[in-house]
Amino acid sequence: MDRKRALAMIGGMNTLSLAQTVPPHQASASRTVGDLLREWRQRRRMSQLLLATEADVSTRHLSFVESGRAVPSREMVMHLAERLDVPLRARNALLVAAGYAPLFRERPLSDPQLAAAREAVELVLKGHEPYPALAIDRHWTIIATNNALAPLLAGASPELLKPPVNALRLSLHPEGIAASIVNWHAWREHVLARLQRQIDVSGDEALAALRDELTAYPTPPGADAPERDNAAVNQIAVPLRLRTPIGVLSFFSTTTVFGTPVDVTLSELAIEAFFPADPQTAAALREFAERPRPE
Image 1: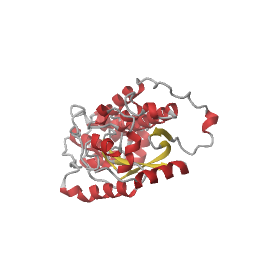
Image 2: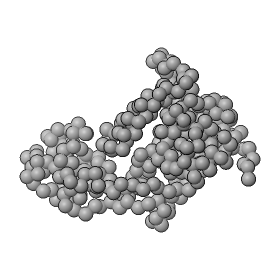
Image 3: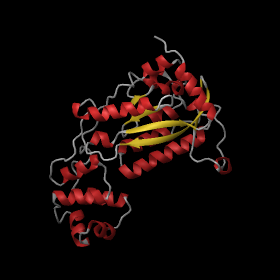
Image 4: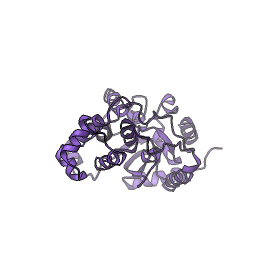
């Protein structure tokens, strides 16, 4: 699959556009603020005593809030949410459950007020070339990419490249690039472990469903045997090793997020940037970038 076709199939990935999202408090509109706070406290593996100490409130008051015997103020809801490191979307749900209006707005990326953020994402993606990078939302839906991603998609089915495209599904699906991944077992383990950490932190049911889907995918034909512990002892991170039309490429990845977002959309936006893990990969990508692009 050539560069132009690969990028075109994702439907203008270079243009930032956020998929439709579920209203922030829809899933928990019928639950009390006490139920939600208790759930977040337990997810963070904190006792009432520990949370009360960190929030500088009495254990009795916190117990009353969780049991519904006391209604917390708006400020108390936000104070506890901060100590529990609750995501912005879920903080809105806490506020609604307590009878208050949501505090954090959720704008589409096309909103004029997010123009600076869009430009920042585009600059990061473009500036990372000739190495691949993509922007994703909280469910790993691809929002935008740079031109260097094309060689990585060569083995994917056109159906999986129709938007909305999920990056994790694309990497592990039998019709995606799974058969092209040299170290499929190690990469699968890395992907599922990372996804589980996201689920533990966010409690997102859609991510849990995605995990279950990915777990059920079969091993692609010809996949190498799982690596033993000794094989990875000298690695600094789990690489993605991929057969492509320009050779076997090896990458490490990093994640970039907005540091102090007050908008739900920005708080859930991330950039996955891939760096060459060996000189051969760097040279192949530089050569690919210098090739004339088809008109």
